[in-house]
Length: 262
Image 1 (spheres, rainbow, N blue to C red):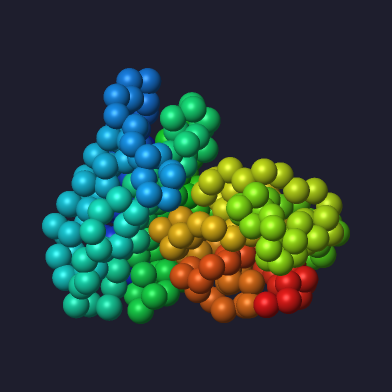
Image 2 (spheres, rainbow, N blue to C red):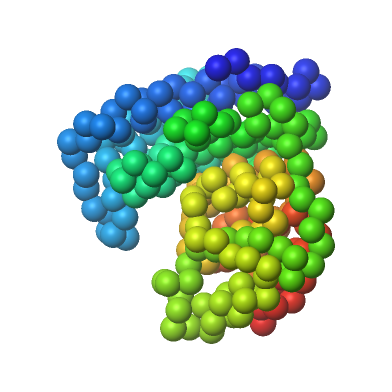
């Protein structure tokens, strides 16, 4: 699928490559989903398949051949420290559990960070045929059409989703998350990176995660920023590297942070 990449994008070459590699990885995921042979369980008890590894190898090779001085940080392979101040952040198959079960919210996540700030993000959801992307200063898009966050401005009107309530149910952070969700108009279960894209495109108003990793967050952070929204941890630090993560339309961001005593 040809993507409508804005001409003014200063990261045009990087974005074009990331989109191409995400598409190729997504094609592999679709082709092999019905014939998975090896499913392993990692130390953190999450599953990994041969498809995760194949997509990681494809993306890593493509990025580092084109930009050999950049760094690389991904879920499924060794990190590489570059010399440019730029690092590619990759989750080759986000949502392996949904992928195994045939739930269509799994995705390919590719981000480029410069000095730990996301400047490019691609979220390709092959089963839904949706590709979200952004580059710093150029806006956010889905399948070539510009997207933007919602205008909801209070938690009581907000519809959101969360990740980590089960894992943190017996500590203060989990209790505060539950209290926060009870103040919203409605709360859904978490749907992987697709939830973040629902915020970026105005379908949801916020998402909170207590347990995911930088490679789950980085592409979304760039896209939400270019769509007019905000991202931070629950102490309002603009980072994808801390324990907690809030992504929102911006209007409800501070009100949600104020609900947590961190």
